Length: 317
Length: 295
Image (tube, rainbow over all chains, first blue to last red; front, side):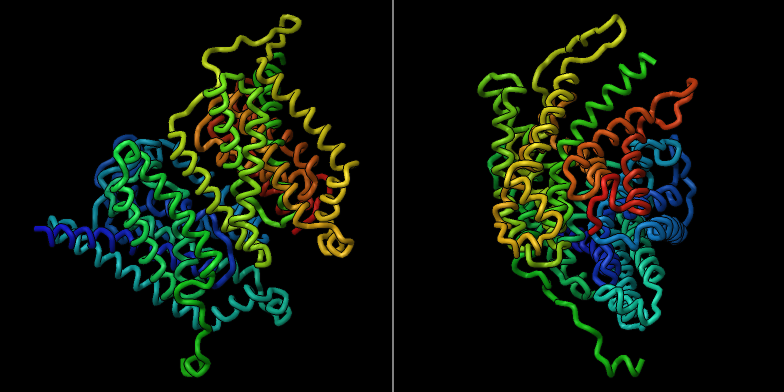
């Protein structure tokens, strides 16, 4: 019994780590490949979660939704909406310098949050959307369903990884790294830096939305308070930097390691005296904030530092 | 018209004063240290809570607690710089930006740990507004906030224009290399930047507490309009940032003023105004109103 409990704790750990791995891979495309500082990850995540929730939920109370569409339709819609929003934002902001891009993306995430909280006809406001199904819910029940869902999440992770890896090795990825490292040089050989950056931002936004959709299906319920937006954005950044920005394997490793640390701080703060117990989540935030500072000062290149694809491999493919 | 002044313009100027006090620090840090300081809002929160502790323990009114908050927050700012920003100073500025994100989180969670998450007030009870000429109704706290901010702006102007430290700060903001070659002690100037930026942020934080209430997200929520204000004034132009803060604050309040009984912008979206102003500036006039530097 003990062991099954432990096993399912591990399953839920892997599910969340997988969702974060998708966000982290998406951020790696934007920041690791393209050098685009996105501080509004939570905004795209929320777009994905709400799109999937509204499209697939089986019943709705006061808002549009309850459309009962299949999960893949929900994910596709989430991807399209996030892609369009990302494209609009990228068209305007993507050429800004990194500090300014950070401010602009924070602002966008804030506006997305305002829309979600205020437009009750669409999102049911602060009450949130419930009745969100999980994939293959009709076929598998109980604990099997948990295992099926974690497999589903990691299939998406692997899919994201392969796409990202292809992008990394492709001529497209090389141009992107060239732009990141020396914009003027890339422009001087005729690369349309604005267009490349826009594409990067849109691809990243789409995968962030997919991660949002996954977590909506996982929680089966989504509201503005279901997740702390700053926590998502922040954890994704810690994961990518700790794992190694520019390296896809590093992004996944970072997600696993940091989510493990994050989960472990929960156990650690459990040992605190009871009068501190209610404040343990702030202690965890404090620790993860200090962890980021430690990584930034000591292990900036991360667990698996960026490596350029081998040249002979390039010739073959 | 009287309603417009009483309920939109005066609160707008008050809000603008608060933004101005935060934006000064952001603009100075951006100008001198060359990075966007995302933990600045949380420095304001720190100041508000230090003042709250002084109000609780010493029983002084909030305005009298300001000096304690200023000293405390300025020290916190200098220590944060030593611990988290200085080690990254020779790297591309984006690392410091990421670090400041982390610092924002560290500050906020430390505040939540120490003071809890319930929202607090300095003074309990309703303040009756003062009435002038039978028509202008202005809350005392609004007058205090605006008056103090004006005094601070004038002091800051004289400090930057005539004192040796102030002049050195402007020199570093204009051209750090040249300033270093000319023999200015950059580290000392950076220390002053944090002292002043932190101190003014603390005053801003206390003013938020006076105007509304004190909660742990107080500063983070102000971050965006303060960035917009710093950009509007021109990066590295502290007084410009104060002007920018004033404009953003007034714009946010008056944009919800119903024209012919129709609300053009719903008040729930007023925090988007700052963002739209910021985006328009970044795209069309990144140097701001007062010709700041473009990084």
